Image 1 (cartoon, rainbow over the protein chains, first blue to last red):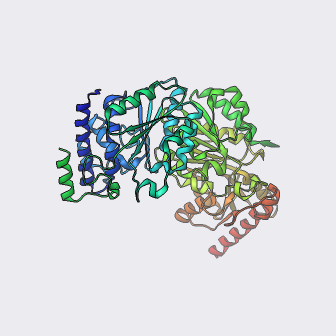
Image 2: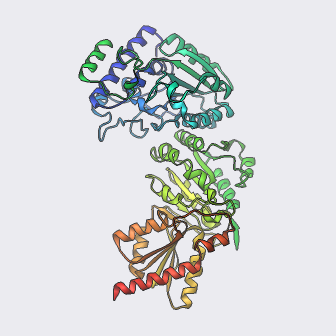
Image 3: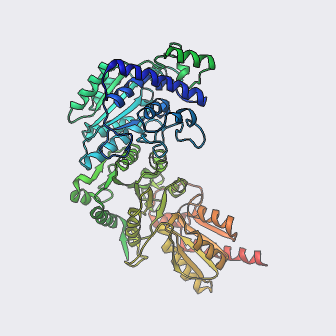
Length: 272
Length: 315
């Protein structure tokens, strides 16, 4: 565990490279949202969460649920790096027949994946269920859930938001990856959720609005969320889709587009 | 004697809650309707009211199961199978999580609430899901035995109950197992394979057929998936004519499952009693069963057709 920002920034860069490499190698996968959420994942897995990749089923571990499951490359690159499975799998298994790394996360196939996801809108409910399950068994560990800002179009997210507040699930922290783009266009153009922070507030959540690429701000919000009692926390992370690769940043096509050979080489160079 | 599914559900949950400390119950604003407020009183920290949010409820149950709880989701069939079907598929079936769904108020027997509440498709959709076991209960004793059976293994299950009152079929020593089916009556001319609320009319039909000189076997196929293929094939071979009966669409339910099996492994004439590709309506259970053809008389009619078809094939 480290909160050394220089180290974490280096780590995030390395893992962004892995994302590019695995998507290029599979010729399929979602880069944009993997890159936008990466700094939050690095903060969690290298500077906050209590888990043991050699003992993935330890009952009192902190858990991370990737509700926006299409950004699995981001999660897989982290899980491999922290030791859940060999890094080679990223290049040989992702989206490949018989592989352990499915296009969208599958908890029974990939160690470290806490919940199957990919159909948008279901992860926060599952995260609540884990928090309730832990509470029932007097386990105090925390549940982190990553949502997309397009994903919150889904009605189930708001059902789950109400559940977490009703049950005062203060062990739940949701991150909303506010990169401003979804599959077809900007979130404003597709279905504008207007004042997202006000919505979470109104649902009874403690809210934070931070720069999702600034480790100091990320850790500050995580720590404050941990101190918050009696209500869940939502951390709105202002991020850039495609972060770290200049020609992918804020480009809607790189939601699910595979880079060409030239783009791939250029991206790796930018991230070196 | 007629007894209430709802009363027995409470008893079954209470008993299993004692045996399984990790059993918790989830409902979507229906604890009163399901007469489960006493469970809440006995186990206040083990009853989770989820509000009217069934999709959320099913995915929450999945998260609970991931931490080792045994969530039992109870609710009207329509709202714990068809409405949150996608959540069941993605959050429970695919990851093979240990969530038990108990669905009350299924089929036309719901009665006066009408078509919106009459789940006539739930057996079909639930048996399509890998990893799921699917049960249908015919009476209160069987309900208890199936709930016990569901708790004994690690994995998802769906149990379908009727609305409320059901005639007793079984004595107290009834045991149910996944993949089980019971021979309630033996016979040699035709096999009536029934489940749930149609088991009683099936028995009635068999007794009436007996008076016509037709010997009908009655099987209660309470485990739709896995199904007792061996027993069904044995009776297909023995009687060479099959009638299925269920309070469900003809398509995809017990009739569908039996037809798939028989068509592939031992083709004999098969007739299905069920709802014929249409929605129900408000009315009493008796009126609806009569209007939609869920009666002993219809079973008898289909039995005669099946037997005559068999003779045509032989001749």
